[in-house]
Length: 146
Length: 147
Image (cartoon, rainbow over all chains, first blue to last red; front, side, top):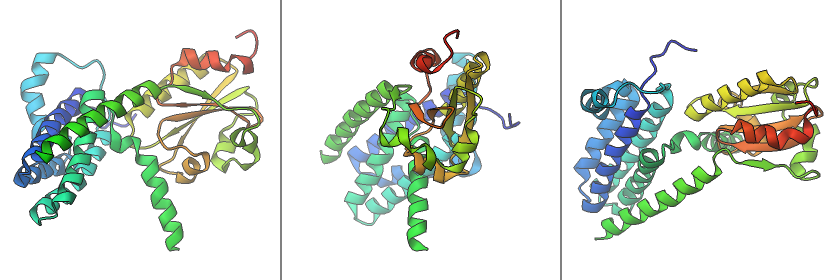
């Protein structure tokens, strides 16, 4: 296998739990600066690397020492991909709320919440599961454009 | 108030989706003989045709993608079961590199494993991480009587 540093899979799941709470608060209150802050958290995880995400730092500092070593480790690429998907939705949502397109803000935040909740509660990475579907759509629109 | 209602609806939808996904994970669907998929052996995409081992009774073609943690788990299980049985051959195709394969086979999620017999006729498919015991049991009619 590749020499990439594998990570404790409970870290991204813990982060998805915090993300779920944050996004639910955004939806209930409509307070978009919190969504903008979540977008920054997503960006840190997706573009700088998972270990630079504040939630991941919190996990390593507070939660992991109490849990003991993980049973297995996983490749950080899939959860990092998912952070990128989350970032896109958080940015669209923030723009929606901030510019008065509240419906857009609600839809984007709602979809991100759904994905984060599925990850936290069931361990499903929606972004990764849908990858072939997205890929097929991109290939098809590419054919139409040609 | 609207936000609270929407949030509750999203949690309800999330629980429903999660339960359906959990129930379908690893489920085996037999391909009906004579159906479009089973008779389309001649129309299989080239990477699948190359993957099928004519010497093995069954080839398990596993479709994976790059950003997919369960694919690694599925890969480990399938290669272990193929190592134990001379009737089984395991091949992996990354549809990140070959997106045409996924759309040609109508695969929406990875990992999906499609079992072909030596002539390229589809026998069954498994979505998610397969339970190898149930998989071998479902393939039994196609394997040597001794195994």
